[in-house]
Image (cartoon, rainbow, N blue to C red; front, side, top):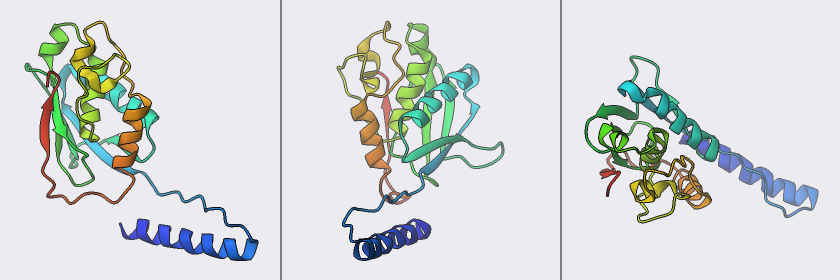
Length: 185
């Protein structure tokens, strides 16, 4: 937080000085480092690869937040658990030092839903997106309402912009109340 504040303050001062010295009133290009959250997939069972694919999709879709696999034996912000229920996740946004869970439920997989779409969708919840149902296949957060034939694991432009906005400012307090949402909700 301190580093981000100092970086923004320095950029602001440079923009003011540059505007005065250079005669330009254009805003400075301020780059603030992405927020990094970590996940633990040690209990993800057969879903480890799908989770990695879902995470990679989010990392390719947004720049204000990065999701990285936690080193073994270290604390992670998000844990991924395989179970026999419906997929569900903590509704974030989860920030560093926070706590979230993705449950990769076998019930939806057994009914024919795309495993990578499920993983990407549930990480959407971790990043602060609610379900948007009913919805078209082009909307990742439409979840199960798009049907079993939908395999789109990518957020649409509106969903990606929402996540960017969620992580554009300082992290929320660690005491923030988080809610669990499911694939069928």
